[in-house]
Image (cartoon, protein in one colour):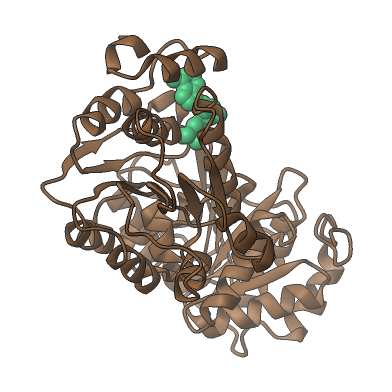
Length: 440
Ligand code: AMP
């Protein structure tokens, strides 16, 4: 199949040709004809699948024949979770809409001056690309109307919900005509995304695109045993100092320990920040922005807060505390290996956490490879036979009496305090990649 088979207008085909693409990607093959036919769509697809063209091309196709009536509002509205994505989408609209001389776009995102955007809105805008918060600002100030929207596109809907935009999106959708076409794109169509999709689409066609194996980054999964929390802290610091580490997400079991661990890393001069559900939404957005900009090296997060984070620079996921639910393990490690890159996921297991590790291994159907750092090996435990599953006499992980000789499987109290941190400084200095000040 090539682009000519999709039913697109000649002007758009010409623009596609100029980009050099010859074959539509799977999401384009399925979504473009269905969208041209006027269907609402629910599409599960990932960044890198070619999804931007999959919604931009049919949206432009829809408005190509009619120049806007004088004084009409935008006919295509695209909502995206972030400023960066909005800019990318606007650029795609301009690229594919090049032959449409009259076509005007506006990009309304937070963090940019209101005034310039208001000025932009004073002239005709055919396509508006926006983040929900800023768009709602303009809407509330009556700087634009959405009553002429023919195509509403939600890009990365799951991320928008993760970022707390659900209410804003509902308010925006309510301001668009009921007879609009809605195209919703999301990494997942399950859970809250599914219920939102149900509210805002009519008899939608579902299109689910599997991520091609070769496009999926490899995630190497490792397991490290720790004697106690002090040992975990030392291992963590050594791991964060590794040269191959670009950015990391460190998972803790509780919001409190996320805060404490993040503070303790900051005290060591590491550009760390916490992300959890107790933080105000604007604060969470700011943290995620800084992560995307590379200004945060280590994000210390809880499960819920980190769901859906898609930052290509995250090379490592470290489970400081193993997840209590085995399925969370899969969500966690999926924060690395994004955009086709490889990633490393390391789970630290304390003496009492081997049951959680076994649950993860049962859930994923694979064994985690045990790693150690020279000089930081865990203390030998009482002998209790090899790990089941052909691991040939690995020293740890068979549950039961894993711990210090004599069965002292204590876990030091007191959390991630200064004491731990300073002890580890003598152990090995971190690589300083994210030393405070090195990155603005
Ligand atoms: P996206 O998933 O929309 O972020 O697109 C991922 C990348 O694929 C972008 O750099 C696009 O320019 C590129 N792309 C989109 N469609 C095609 C295609 N049919 N063939 C090759 N590359 C494409």
